[in-house]
Image (tube, rainbow, N blue to C red; front, side, top):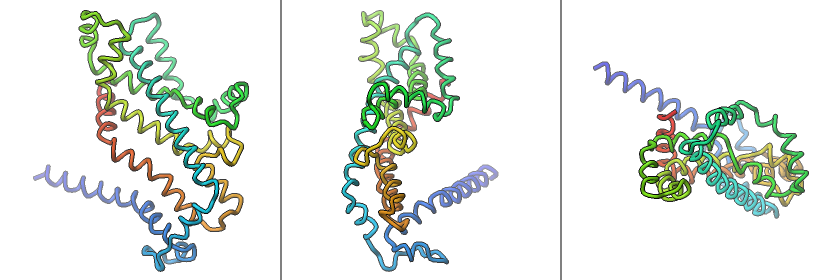
Length: 274
């Protein structure tokens, strides 16, 4: 009896919290189809009347908007691909291979998680400037090509396999490189899916990095481009920004729906070993 009451109250509280968190998003969806006068009215109106697509049309009238979307896709794809390679290989090395001071090096790497991103902003700016990649999408992608959190995730996932699996591969004549490509990688799809989602979310929604390292309007990513359009009074109302934000969030939602099982499985298995 007490168990049923506990489950009932737990689900009730979670449902209420879910509704609270979803309410601003639902409100944004409705507001994107409203005029600014209706969206800013008090008391708030939920149903668009009249229903209008003008906010979305204002976005597509901007000549740079398609370019901003493509730039964001390009940078995000490069960052996801680079992190998949670097995190999987580094995670495998820290989990399976033996080399001097491995634990000390890994502990030093983890300390970088405690460093706020803005601390490294100036050194990264100097590095990108020296490489001649300021106002270049490749420079932006280079800065996000590896992450400590991704390495940690993959290391924990490889540790969950147990060293016996790789010992068996070694006995069968597989060197560490073959073990990585033929044993570790095929079994790490859940962790790679989780890694891809996390990195895509971070790179797609990134604002500070693109704002600092990009100069030309045609090179802006979508978050910076939307901010630029509003700050230059291309729009005098907030509803086009709301519509643009919804378009920007759509790929992340779709990716999560498609890969959420990999994210959950990969994160859970990695956490168990942690």
